[in-house]
Image 1: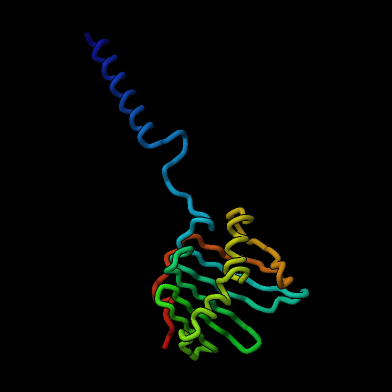
Image 2: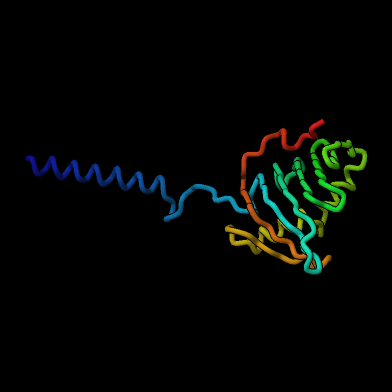
Length: 173
C-alpha cells in the first residue's frame, strides 16, 4: 500500500514538474524579449568623430520612441569650434530647440530641416543606428566609417532601452 502511494506521489510530482517546464520554456528558449539596437525603444550612446586623423567632435545621443513617428531626439555636441551645442527635436509635436553654450532658441519653424539634418537618409543618427543594428555585436565600442563624408565614428557607452526622463527632451529655458 505504501509503495503504491509513493508511486502515485512520484508520478504527480513528475507531471507537475513537466507541466511547469513546458509552460515556462518553449523549445529551450525563454519567452523574454532580448532588446538590441534593432528593436530598442530607447537608445543612448556617446560618439566621437574623426576626420583626416583628427578627432574633432564628441557627441552624446539620447532617443525615446525610436523608430516611431513620435520619436524624440537629443544630441549634445561637446567642445565644438564654437562651444557646446544641444539639439532637441520632437517629431510628434514638430518642435525643435537649439542651445549654444546654454542659450536656448526655439527653432520649431525650421523643424523639418532640423530633423532631416540629423535623422534623414544618410544622416548621422540614421547611419549610426544602421551601423549598430547591422554590424555591432552588442558589447563594447563600435567604430564605423561614414562613406559619404570619410569620417570615422566611434560609438561607445551604448545603453539599449535605458529609462530616459522626459525632462531630458525639454529645453532648460
